[in-house]
Length: 358
Image (cartoon, rainbow, N blue to C red; front, side, top):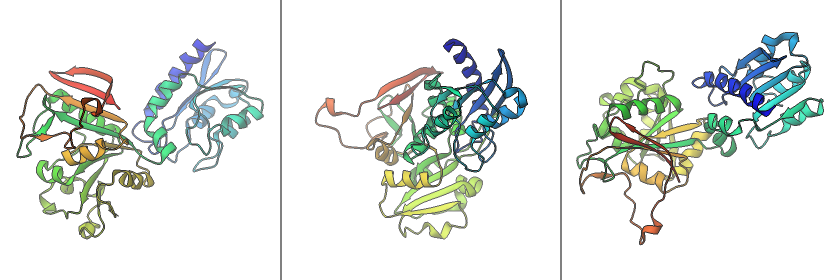
């Protein structure tokens, strides 16, 4: 029976992926309803604020849902939000059995949807392909559990650990295959983050240059104590002013740009990364791609807030006066160095892509 449940859950997981670019800050959820070995209803969460996956599946199944088995990638909700409780709808439809990928990670509601259905006499099975369900919604899981965004640090580096030459030029350390991968990453997150120096030296666009473009992420600039200048010459402000969030020290002077950007966030501590992440979490930003430069990378590497590290290693050596990925002090012993564990890796047209964690 478990093999059959896993097969149907795979179908539900694939349905859930259809909401990848439209549901944040909500999770991606897919659901199917099966009766007499036939799928009679299916649905996925299409957009935040819209009906949940279970509702669409129940609508398609109609009265045939009575006595059926529902497969859903995430525990049905038990509370009123922008939509009614899904657990209640499942009970009313007289579904006989519910198979769940993972419990709701929200500590305030986890397990309550399951209990509601069990109390109504529904057989509930949990943990079917749970690892895949968690991986699918890893951004949501961290955000709803901690109030902080899921953080991915991305850097293109040389063999000697440099991200740019001495004058700040970094175009292009990585190759076209690596840059294509970067655009896929940008397309998957809520926001991209850079520092003041990267903004001024690289004058980046931070766009998603892809024929499969689905969304335009927010652009977060860590300005610290410095005031931005020459906005008319900066690509970000010419192209994405309404998507920009400036994070600064209190009274750094960027308040004057408030009507040209989405928001200016003023904090008392410059580059207190945790306080920045808390502020972004308050704004329902569930995922951030950190793109540099050296000071920003170093600040994040000195915390435990990064969930994934994506390194694109190019077969070049820049030299000792190049700009390093990490500018923190060297430890007294090699055993005290920052340690990483490889999650995956592959060649990208001569560059090496490494997905790491700590």
